Length: 217
Image: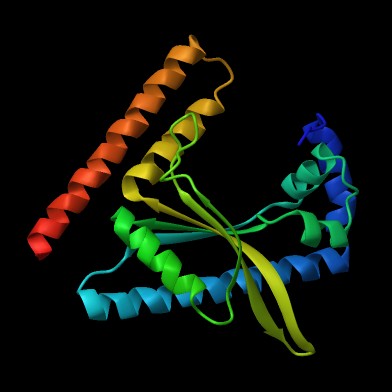
């Protein structure tokens, strides 16, 4: 998809007017509720998994709600009118959850258990673990539809859920910080080294998982 260059100042100006509307605040509250619903489901699965396998499938869980400027910026860069309807229809990553697991195997098990629940509908799945991005990025991304129950009825919301191992999360965090440096000398060399680091960490994930299997067998 071709994108339009949008200045931060332009997005901020539009967001300032738009974010002050009661309807926008209400929509953001709905997304927060959706995050809580998915987070609760994951925490319940974590406890049940611990009972069955004597270990927790994930180490940590983080949630985030995209800020108004980023929402506006993303719509404008795609040439889409900024409206409540377009926010809900066009953007899938406003509500986000990141789950950090110890092992790759736990990522797939936990993801499968989540989408097997009868009120969770998977809309999109991108496996950057089996097929990493060119820069070495690895993670399992899913967009799920989750119902939230309000005083006047039920509303379906979209939540992005990302699953990573500790090693994948470490790499992504460092790569993100380096990517936003204003000036990088020899960016191609840096990119190649980061890619090698991602491959090394992936091999380490495989080795650690093999060690766990040998201990458990």
